[in-house]
Image (cartoon, rainbow over all chains, first blue to last red; front, side, top):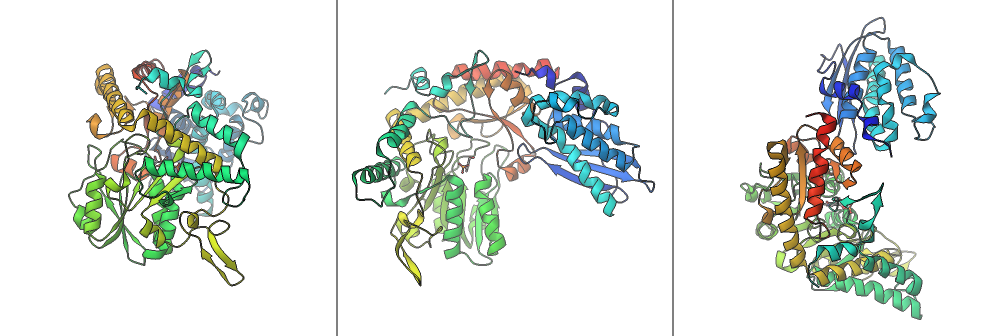
Length: 156
Length: 410
Ligand SMILES: Cc1ncc(COP(=O)(O)O)c(C=O)c1O
């Protein structure tokens, strides 16, 4: 059985206790997307401000939820700030790969060889989540919400 | 039978399961209870010895199957004090029962602008069917508010019921454990000329129930929360009320006559039981009712009140202000549903930490989002007690809860 130390890594708890980029941005110019996890009631609000060159100039995170959903959102915000929207989309793909939710089963190991991505940084601390399949939804919530915000930013 | 929890526990095979070398502590009966061996045996015996389709064959097995099902119907009627077995309609679960009621009674009685009164503490099963009628018919919903103690605030009851066609209300909250004053609500509804339907999903498993004494018109509950199998629920209604309702699903069993031009409906209860029912599950629910009856619902209730009092007292003593237990503070006016907030550990994390010690509680909004919004919460960790739980289970919960401190570092 997977131990809780695989899930609750120090860096995850740090992001949970001291969330980065917490707050709101004015819309417009920023776009806002909301994500819900209907099972547990977690809510994430993602604000992104994309400048004319396609760079995410600013990001803010709102909502409430468990340590995994909140820390994942915090790490995500730090990772995408200053990145282009294309880079952010790549990161979404990499992160979902890390969570093994692409075609692969749910046994964490499978994903690792997939697409080594050094820019994952702190985010790789969330790798342990795959051993707790019900928590994958928590970790991925903010990323799906970001994808929605990126879509909205494009159509604006 | 005397009320001895150790003996009772031994009747439930699943509760003796050991996982990773540790016993399990099951505290999620508000979501679904476990079943005693007698229920499993009844279903097994039915399939091994007596299965055939019901109400159709003239041969021995078909008669046995029909008798088994109708015998269960009578037991369930007796268990809730229903005057007639034909008033007990079998469905898939409480959700289907409430949808049946809303669609069928609603179609017959509700028009655009008609008012249906709910409370803020309803389960989604008693909210969404009415939202659906808001969309399809244009009914209007009013809400009885919940106060800080987690009780219904009845200050404005008469005004809320004024001109209303229906009051649909839970008898016990699945989040707060609040037992609502059904008799008073039934009187007020009737005085206003409204019909009252009650969601008894959390009530029937835990308290002696008499639908006539409660003074209500219709009642829904679900088998799997009262030691029965999944896949069977009940709608009870007064004969006159059910007779005046149009059928819900159409098909076999619910008809008297079918021609190329149309159909006529069968009598109660068959009118509302289209198609082959969940016969084995119904038989299982009958056995569950036998088990509860043998224990005695008065004794079940007394055990749960004292265990709830123990849980509230011991958790408070041990954790003080670090723990919040939502809902009524008086154990006698509530059920054993304990919605907990512990420090600022998120409920989802609490249930994860407890899982490590095989302590099973539910985290989330418990399908009662409007109530959570009123309480300003987005989730709670809910430990719920039943007849097979004892003080040791509560102590195990408390120990496991304390271990959250190691991880979250308080
Ligand atoms: C108060 C209440 N009503 C209705 C339901 C729905 O029961 P079921 O899912 O069996 O239809 C539940 C159970 O979750 C409940 O607690």
